[in-house]
Structures are given as C-alpha cells and as structure tokens.
Length: 118
Image (cartoon, rainbow, N blue to C red; front, side, top):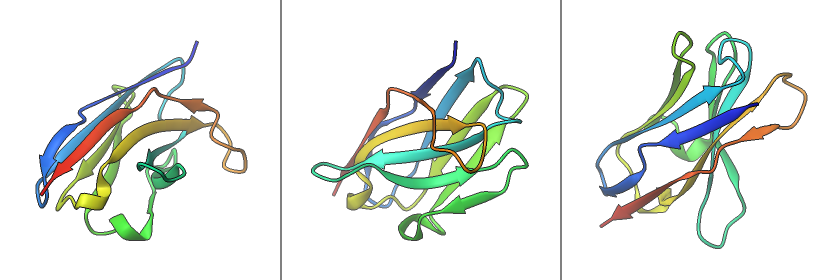
C-alpha cells in the first residue's frame, strides 16, 4: 500500500522560509518520479516542482530561485525548501508520485497547509 504523508506546513512571514517533507512508503523515491503540487484558494491545483529518480529537478517559473526540491533516497523522504516566501505561495501543498515519466501522477498525499502572513 502506497502512502505519502506530508508535514512541515504552517504559518510563515512573507520573506521567510519553510521546509515541507513528504514521507513515502510502499514506493521508493529512487525509482519514482516525485513532485510537489499546490492548490491556492479559488485556483486549480498546479505543479510546483518535480524531481526524477536520478535527482534532476524542474520548477514552475514563479518559484525558480526560491524553492528547492530534494529527496533522501535512503529515508524515502521528499523535501521542498521554500525560501523568500511570498503571499501568493499560500496554498495547500501536496506530494505526488508516479513510476513512468509519461503517465499522470498516480499517488497523492493528503496535503499540508502553508499560510503566509504579511
């Protein structure tokens, strides 16, 4: 049974930093494509960052230079380091996983909420 459990959300001041974690079980981060998505109030869910089994990251334009996706394959944990957080980063953040690059993300966590105070 695959489980993705996010943690690390909370309230952060604009300009501050936060690190999200996603503990994976039933899959291994060394073989799966992993990603962070977010859903802002009134908006559709959007991709934030991805990381492939080899550790190569991609980022959505608005977070480039501020967010860093990484993983610890030994512990099966995915991270999202969020620096210089902006008001518009407030959202529910979800961890996701898929096995093949050309398929939709199949496994999803329950999400962790990030709020940003001005």
